[in-house]
Length: 428
Image (cartoon, rainbow, N blue to C red; front, side):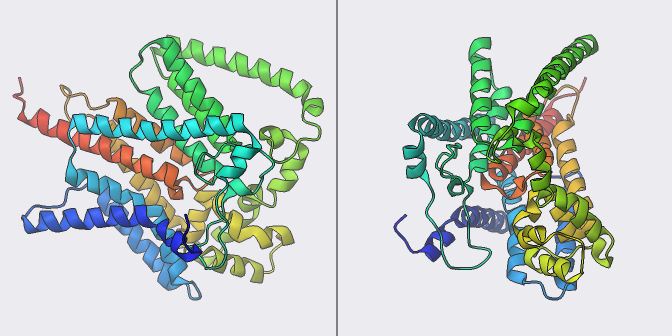
C-alpha cells in the first residue's frame, strides 16, 4: 500500500476498530429501545469480567510496566471476543449463518488458490508476495513478518505475510470442511487432503500436528465403542510400525537438515536450539514466574518489562535466551499467560473457555438438536486453540482468532434460537 509506515501500521488495526464500532452501535441502539444486552450465559460473562479486572490489577500492581503495551496485549487477546456479543445482538437467522460460513470458505479458497500459485510459481511468486518492510515506530505497532525471514524457502503464506497465519486459515477451512455436507466420499477426502497438504507446506510444525490430531480424533470418535476400539488399535499399529521404520533410518534421512525443515524437530540440533526458545521457556521461565510473589496476579502483560526482571535476577539463563526472550515468550502462550496474568488470570481464562464449550455442547431440550455443523466446527476450533497455544499465540492471530470467535458466536446464536424454539413447542 503506497502510504507511510505509520499509516500502514494503523490501517492494520481497522478490523478491530470496525468490530468495536459495530458493538458500540448495537449496544446504543438496544439501550435506546429499552432492550438488554444478550449474554453468553452459564456464568461465562461474569468469569470474563473478573478476568479483565484481574488483568487490570496485574497492570496496576506491577510498577515499571508500559501501560500502552500492557493494554495492547490485553486487547490482542480479547479483541475478537467482541464478535460473540455482536452476533448475539444481531442474531442472524439460520440461512444467514450458513451464508456467513460459506463466505468464510470463499475467503479460505481465495487464499488457498494464492498458495497454490505461490507453490508452483516458486521464488519469483514468493518474492512478489513478500510483505513490505516496516521501519521505525514502536510497540505495539511494529510488525515483523515471518514470510520475509526465509526468502530462500518457498513456505506458503498467501497474501498474509506470516506463514503460520496462512496455516491457521487453512486449519479453519479444514475443520469447517470436516463437518460440511459431503457431496461424495472422494470429493470430501480430496478437500481434506488438499488442506492438509497446504498446511504442511507452510512449514508450521505446530499447525500441521494439530490438524493431524484433529483428523485422528474426529475419525476415532465416530461409531460405537467396538468400532472406536478397532480404529484406535489400527491407528496405533500403523503409527508404531511407521515410527519404527522411520527411526531406523532417521540418522541417515535427517543428516544435515536445516532448521527450516519440518523434520528438523527430530534431530539433535533441535533440542539445543529449542533450549533457547520454547523448551527454555518451559524449563527456566515457568519455574521463575511461579516461585515469585507475582505468581498469583502475574508480572503484567509487558514482555519487555518481564525480560528486564529476569535479566536482573541473576538467573542461570543463557545469554541467547535472555536476548531473545521478548521475541519468543509468547511462543508458549499458556506460559506467557501465566507470566502476564498469574495463576488467577490463566485459571479464569480456562474457566471462561470451558463455560463456552459447555454452552455450545449441551442441548437445551431433548427434542431439539443444536449440535449442527457450525457447533461442531466451533468446538473443534476451540479445542485446537488450546493445543496451538502450547506452541504459538493462536488467540492473538487474526487469521485464527477472528474465525474462532466468529464460529463460537454463530454456534451460541444457534443454541439460543433453538432454546427459544423448544420453549415455544408444546411439551407432551
